[in-house]
Image 1 (spheres, helix red, strand yellow):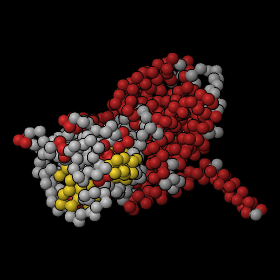
Image 2 (cartoon, rainbow, N blue to C red):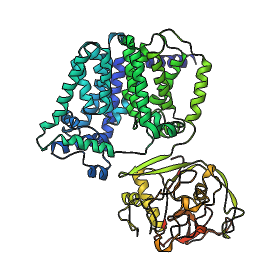
Image 3 (cartoon, one colour):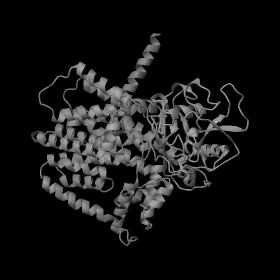
Image 4 (cartoon, helix red, strand yellow):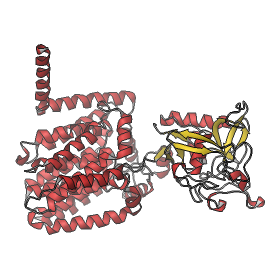
Amino acid sequence: MGNTLLVMKKIVNAIRWFFSNHTCVFWLGMAIVLLATTLEVVRGRNTNYFDYQDSTRMFWEGLSPYNLEYAQAHSIYFLYSPVFSVIFAPIFLSPWWLGPYLWNIGNYSLFSLAIQKLPHQFDKYKHWIFLFLFSVILQTVFCYQHNIIVAYIYIFAFILLERGKGFWAVFLIMLSATTKVYGVAELAILLCYPKMWRNFGYAILCGAFFLLLPAINTSFDNPFMLYQEMFDMIASHHSDSDFVGILFARGLKPFLLPNYRIVQVILFILLGIAFFVRYKRWHQLEFRVQALAVLTGFMILFSDCPETHTYIIAFPFYAMAFWLRQERNWIDWTLFWSLVVNFCILPTDVLCPVWLHEYIHETFWLDVYTYFLCWLRIIWWAVGPEEKVLIPKKAMTVLLALLIPMAIQAQNNKTFKVKGVSFKMVYVEGGSFSMGAFPNDKEADADEVRHQVRLNSFYMGETEVTQALWEAVMPKNRSKNKSPQHPVEYVTYDMCKEFISRLNSMSGLHFRLPSEAEWEYAARGGNKSKGYLYSGSNNIAEVANYLKDPNHAAHQPVAQLKPNELGLYDMSGNVWEWCEDWYRKTPQSKPSSNFYVIRGGAYDCDPKYCRVSNRFMYDQRRRFRHVGFRLALSARE
C-alpha cells in the first residue's frame, strides 16, 4: 500500500512538473497539432482549409470567389476580403499536403510567441496564460480557423504599442482589419497611447495600402468590384442557427435578438462613455489590458454570429486582465474555473463526450453566461471605484439565482442546413395527454377514441418539408404545384422514407416521420396546449389553408398563417402529413398491413378534417397532390 502511494505521488509530481514547464507544454501542443493535421488531411476533413484554398485559386485565376450562385450551390460563403487571397497565397498555393501543416504549425507557433513576448509585467504569468488558452488554441487549430490569426495579431499589436512602435502596431491592426473586419476594433485603444493622431494617420495609409493590394492581380478588369461582391455575399449569408453569444442565450434570446442592433448600439455608447469618464486611467497598463478585454468581449458576446472558436479573440485579454489583477477574490476564482470547465474541458472531445457538452450547452448555456459574468467583472475592474468594494456572497447568490433559471428556461430549437437550404426543428417537451376527440366534439369519427398517452421529448419540423429541401436531398421533385417554399406533395410513404434515409446520410442524424401520437400532441400544442379544436386556434381561418372556395383550392407556401402554441405552422390544413404508424381503427385494434396514418387535413378539405383529432388512412403505394409530410427527431439527437 505504501509503495503504491509513493508511485502515485511520483506520477502526480511528474505531471505537475511537466505542465508547469512551458517548453514541455509547447511541444506537447505541437505534437497534437501535427497529429490532428495529419488525421484531417488523410481523412480529407480539413474543409475550412479547402474553402480558403479554393477561394484563393479562384482569385488568382481571375474568378470571383464571391459568386453568389456558386456559394449557394455549394454552401460555401467566403467571408474574407480579397486582401486575404493575396497575403496568404503562398500557403494556399503550396502542395495540397504541405499547406495545412504550414497553416496550423505557423498559427500555433505565432500564438505561442505572442504570449511569450508580452510585456515584462506578465513574466510571472505568461505560462499560466498559455496553459489557460492551451485547449482553446488546439480546438481552433483543429478546425483551421482564421480567428486564431485575429487573436495573435491583437496581442502583437498590443505588445508593439506598449513598446512605442505605433507604426508597426497599426500596420498589423490594419492587416487584420482588411482581411476580416474583427481586427478594426483595436484601433479604439490608440486613444490610450501617445501620438494618437499620428497613429490614426498610419491607420489610413496602411488601410489604403492593403485595400489596394488585390490590384496586383491583373486578371480582373476592376479588382475593386470584388469588395462590393464580398459585401453582397456577407449580406446574403444568413443563418437561423443559435450561435454561441448572449443574444442567443436561453432566457434572454426573446428579448435581445429581435432588437439586437439597438442593444449593440446602446451598449457601445455606454461603454464609450465609461471609457472616456475614466480617461485618467488611460496611462495604466492594467486599465489598457482591461479595456481590450472589454472591447474583445463585447465584440464576441454581442455579435450576431459568434461561435465557440471565436472566443479565442477575447480570452487572451481576459486571462491577462485576470492575472494582472493584484487581488483576486472568491468571485474571480469561481468565474475563472467555471470558464476553464465550460470552454477548455467540455468542448474537448477527448475530455468530455460530445453529447454531454451539447446537452450542457443547449440546456443551461453555462458557457455563455459564465463568460458574460466574467466580462461584467472586467468592466467593474476597469471603470469601478478605485477603493476596494466588498461584494457579499449573498448578493452573488441572488445574481446566480436570477440568471440560472433564465439559462434553463427552454431547450433549444435546432436549425439545420442542407446545401444552403435551412429548416428548423422545434423542441417539444414530453408529457402525458388525452389523445382522441374532445368529449363534446360532434364531428368526431368512431376512430377518434379518447385514451391516455405518454411521450418522451422530441423535435418536430416547424413546417412541412418544402420543395426546396426536397430538391436539396432528392434527384427529382414530382410535386404537381411546384414552388420552392410550397410543401412537397405527390409523395408516397416509401418516397418519404427514401428522402429521410438520404437526409440522414447527409446529416449524420436520425430524422424520421413522427408517430401518430407525437403528431397529435404537437398539433395540440404539447404541454402549452390551450385546448383548441384546430392547431393553434378555434378559428380555422387563422391557422389553416382549407377548402373555402372549390374553384381556388391549392396549397400555399408554408408558414403563412398563425403558428400553434409551440410555433408549428400548418398542422391543420395545407397538405395531409404522413405518420410513421400503420392505421388502427382503435388503440386495441390490429394494425393494417396496407394503410398508414395521415393527419391534419389539406387545402381541399372541409374544417372537419383539419381538426387536431381527425384521423385518416392512406395506401402506402398511393400519392396525391394534397399529401406531404414533416420531419421528427428524437430529443437525444
